[in-house]
Image: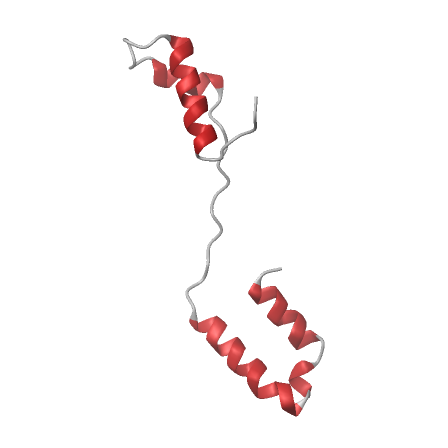
Length: 84
């Protein structure tokens, strides 16, 4: 659960209504809102065979299959795509 969602749940549970937790909850909220907004990373997807072939046009000295294997290896090293 994200920090933001957890904080909202605490507000909804009524922790802010209790004097002992009101001020700390308020301070935590202010600190969280003062931080820059975290944007989620876009999901990376493996290249399609067509995209690989298009990139291969400029690789005249590399065989098509070797180039595809190189792309797949790079994707694997970056955690993109599944295991084949």
